[in-house]
Image (cartoon, rainbow, N blue to C red; front, side, top):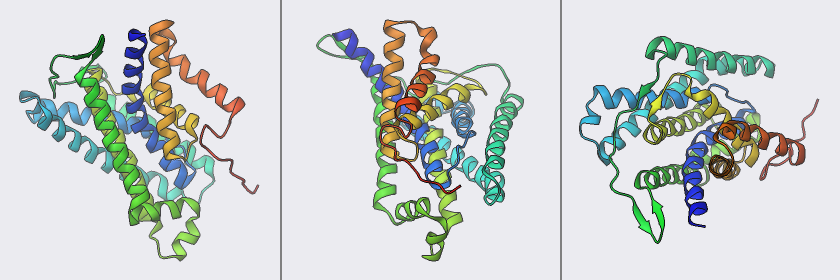
Length: 300
């Protein structure tokens, strides 16, 4: 039983990171009906911003909560800027175009970031600097609690709570929900639709940048293609929870993380990536709208 609980805790830590990325997918889809395939690569940018901040700004020389907080802030800021630029120059000019054009552009932006990253950062994997040194794990009975894992989970929960507060408790959040319902009606009510869409991209990208730092701390090897599989799994998590639903994205991501941890522990680690797509197939077969999603009626 202790071993099982240990794997559940491990899965929740991994799922919390998936959730930070899945929220970006679900927010953009909710407001634009667009799958932003470049989102996983924004997460990769966040990891590399943390890498260079640790190496060249000296944050790795004084590891601690201050250095981690500084790297986290820089990664979120850099990822938010990247999200704004992607929306402004890649997606906004195509907003009135057929949806397939935007979809192809999203794939193109993703490839640009991946292979541009290989040119700029180098194709070889890099080891993430030590920004925080956890103390000895503490025990609850026979259950071992890793302090770094708990810190990652705590940071993820704080960021997700902050996003939920923005969406449901602020004027900007109300505007985001209005735009997701109907762009034209929101514009008639005086809501700056373009600005709200940019803010949505920036918020989702900032969370992805934070996820890049947390993954770098947990699995300290990064490379320019690291966003491919992680991004796909986060997208699957968003679909499982009901893409377009913020709470559903978090639930789907936590379920994904726990399921992956249990598969590694009790089956074989080689199946960890196949698991995500197996879950996706089952969801599409038996509950296509996701756990908390709603069916949308579209005019054809």
